[in-house]
Image (cartoon, rainbow, N blue to C red; front, top):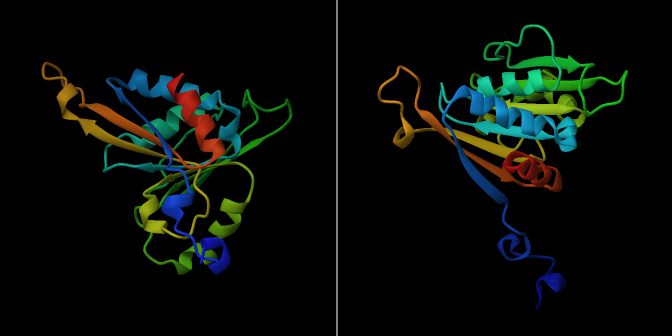
Length: 190
């Protein structure tokens, strides 16, 4: 019997693998330039982007540059203790004058109880329009819904700066899982 007749299919056969792209950031200016490219892509205003990387990998630094590029004003702090920090931008260059971009920056590093998901209203936040940026997404596996793209940051010790006190360069990999993620990938590599 075919998979159509039985109702069972092997997704490895039917689904296409996510599109991937890798690069290196030698300096924080490279991080800012990457954020600018993402911020110029219209798909960013409704995307869910997850960020992987160890402590100190540069996830929050990237988020700060991205939020600034999207027109967020004021202090941008890490949501490590609050789990989520809401932001909004009325100066987003991708929106019409008078429109507001809603952004939620999640950090699930301290997230331990899936019951918190419902109690905190995260289901509603992920279902609402706007940009969702998620650090430590593996702590909320199975709860977020569709992820458009995932970004992995890791130190690239081969590009370390031996004669300076700068942190090592970063190896960055972007995986696109949806058409919106593919648009972000294309914008990132342009």
